[in-house]
Image (tube, rainbow, N blue to C red; front, side, top):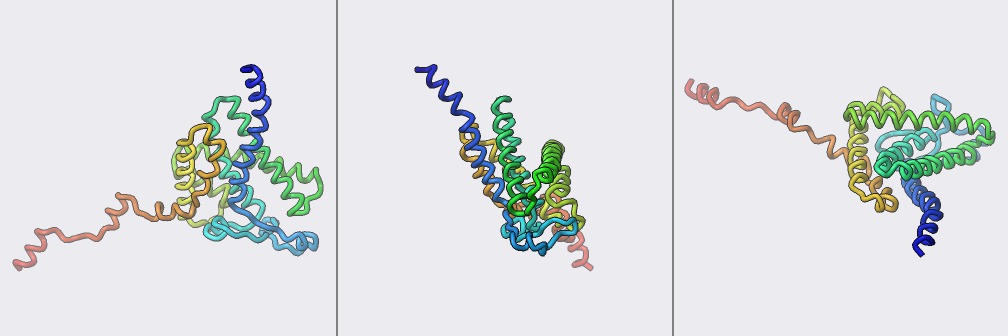
Length: 246
């Protein structure tokens, strides 16, 4: 009986991984949704960014509060940002399990990305989609390395990584947005780290529901050192007595 149970667990594990990572991925991919008008794509009238990227319609925090354009690039970078947080937590599993879960999570992303290229952006050529996917994979590997470095070296380095990847190194970026994003990343990593492994597979998405814009309340609050510098200066008591005597 034990051998049968063990066999069932081994054969059922891949399906469990696929289902669980799909649920986690869905939570990541919904962060910066956008829509592309298929009629405008076919007619060639869809607006473009200065880099030639299709501009769609999007609503939500990343578009409204953080002023990111509703494009494939924004969607992919924000999705990868969310994926990274889970990806990092999965490293705490044993090596084989971590690799399996990470690989499935990444596969879901690239399947979705290729489908969007085809259905939303009219890229019907498989060869062209393959080339774009290779570029996207390089971006993913670069983002993981950059965020890893930032998490290890400090908030300034992490903010720089977010600026380069999510905000495309825009010179007019609001530093407050970067600070809120970094604070949100730290909070999510902490919440994911506090989850038991088994709970992670079913509740990882809940840690990503906390909106990054809520961290404005944190970053807008001056540090104690800065608060001391901003506090109004009061005249020394001795100086006040001297002036009264005069």
